[in-house]
Length: 565
Image (cartoon, rainbow, N blue to C red; front, side, top):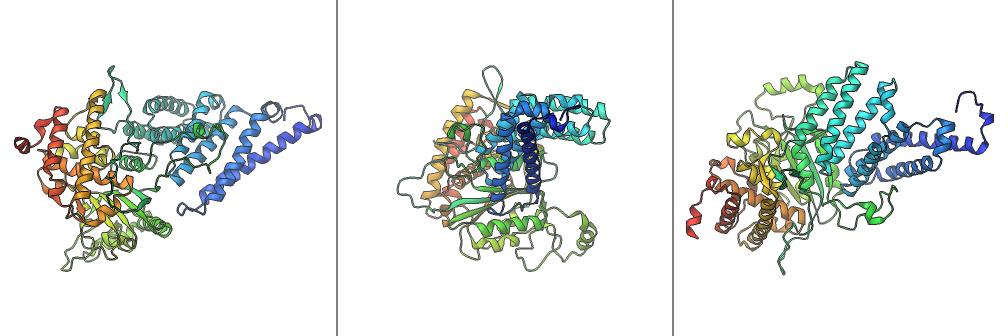
């Protein structure tokens, strides 16, 4: 309320407006702060709380729109405060996306974050002598960048990074704060993240085109008529990233970022679909079948990983599949054991709790014991009571070849190469080649052939050719007489079908490539695929050589098979 004015001078209606606004503002903050106390796992516990929070923010947003004039004059509402409410709504939508894996909510988060920038809600912050307000602005930029990355708006990301860089410079000069290094690290991380793709697609005017690699209409080869495959549906996925020195931003490694997109459909804009722009209605479902629900775990400890696995397993619906994707540093066995069981081959790294470091060093001295901060193949055995699809991208992925299907449920493990030629290994900081193949086979193929850029016309032609290749690989899998039934049981789900097809394409490509000469440079699987019917099929080899010729890199592949045609 303004200076000399007493409360009695203000009309009752306007006073009530200010009181109602203060109530809604306090209630919204209280509910928003309570979100962090909700369990991160489990599908049901959080929904009603999220619904209440959305309701209050909807009321608050509409209220400040309807009574802006009164709030400006009587409450002294500042533009950065409106920006703060819009930013919280953007965060709500983003967290709703994380909880539901519905990409449409990313668009909603984007629309609120975008409005903040377009309407310069935070513009006046720099004129106030309050560093904590500037930090709110910087955090808003970081969150906006994450949403833009997930929506593949790379051109906008570059603009936002430039603006954020200027804001950080201004902030550190004015306030001489201790968090300068942290903010500079944020800038470095996002810059490396944007540059992580090894190959770019260029337009005729040499501008970079952003290609989406989410599931799109027509990108999955249809099943042949009368083909009997399993009716299982991918319902839940754990995406785990624990690679040392891999490019990351905001608790997402580049491998995690790629895999989460491989498990999502192209986003639908809810606003255009429901024609209720500006409303907050998280209960409205997009028309398409949902994406599998995902948990993103960055450097989890073993207990965190096991807790999330157990929660997913417990809530997995009937006729559904749990996918576990592990992108992690390999942990190798220390001692040698006469009996080789599921804990004798090592596994992949889990994070150590800072407070058990002393205990860990003692434990490591005893060679007879197993590595504690490690997910061993045996740790997954209890979860094979339900259909399980495992992808391991690690230098010790082959530890997971030693699986035993104890309960007769569908079980498949796709395992990365454990060693790469030096030229490929040098690129590993920008993400694993194996995951790149599962995310975008053409990007990976071009990368492994040393291409830095591909023209748009050629890219589209190659993608069209790959659709035919995928269809043929699909038929190889379904028509093989000696293939393990587990592969067919997963083949009914579109996401898993595409992953299996891309896996076969990756294996066949690396087997033909002249740089990949060791068997440990090839992907493997449990159960094993019949090689002659799939990864060493002469038809598939012919296709790969045709693709190499199209991209003018045929000299990098063994072409003995070409003479047979």
